[in-house]
Image (tube, rainbow, N blue to C red; front, side, top):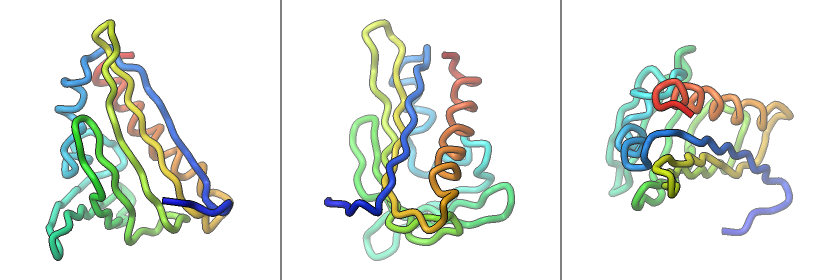
Length: 140
């Protein structure tokens, strides 16, 4: 996919002491975001016209509709189709990569077209909150 210069990129990487398999068992289910991300209070998965979607409800009552684009061993890519976030054309990948010492790195990154100057900070803040919860759960 080719993006114009109007697209921003935000990403985070986190080193965890746990194995990639243990971390992926916790975060790898597309419908499990509410189980580990403190901002998401509810995550419902549904299939619409052969595509897998999740409806997220946040602690402040916001709702987001996200579509699973691709999934593989220890990664998935999704796009936001409806959301109050200040972004358009948002596409994101969450992945876990094993390290030789038995730990792992978690990567979460997105490209999107910002609709407000705050977009990078908003997206980064969502990733940071999730990574803080993972660090608390698995250790760095």
